Image 1 (cartoon, rainbow, N blue to C red):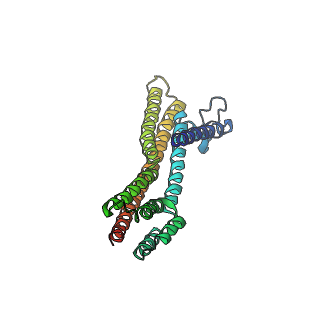
Image 2 (image 1 turned 60 degrees about the vertical axis):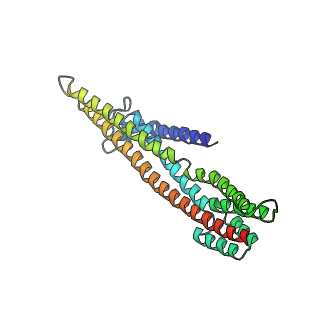
Image 3 (image 1 turned 90 degrees about the horizontal axis):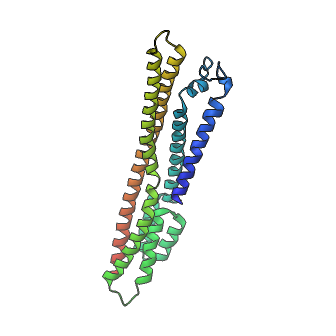
Length: 260
């Protein structure tokens, strides 16, 4: 399902980007030579960008892919935090556990939702299931609780990091494609200069435009992806650290309760 979502995002982004490139930027009304589309009208930005070549369409698609996954990560990470402030939620859970009110702690998890609440809830439910089990000693009871917490953590943590690899991939690919476009544009420009006879200003400007617009597109996609990759990676690290601290606090309180 994850791969299917990623493939759909990539396909739609590229389709939208090339639709914009060919139908809007490549509209004949943007050019002085409507048939060949080599000379954009003075001051026409869309026509000028179009002269950057088909790689501009690919770079636009990569920018759309990056924006889509940035939005997806914002929504997913905020959802993973739950409904209320995490620090307040943790304090309420600790208070309920100290007061030996496990049911209220579980109810608090149900209200909070999110990754941390799901992990804590799994541990508390397992605690309730084993605390009166006479076939298990205190150590084995806590092992069962920790096992339940670990299983829940292993399920929730990958969801926080999901699709970050897409942003890092876009950053790498866009840089390479931008460099390729720059190289192709410079080849065309130097070919116009070295062709002998009168230098074609049209060919020269087309080559330079292709080089510059591909460079700009590659840098925009790369910078956007790198900045938000680091931003989300930091948020995920902080969230995971908070999860670890909360788990440690909950298990310590439950260990004391079981031994009483």
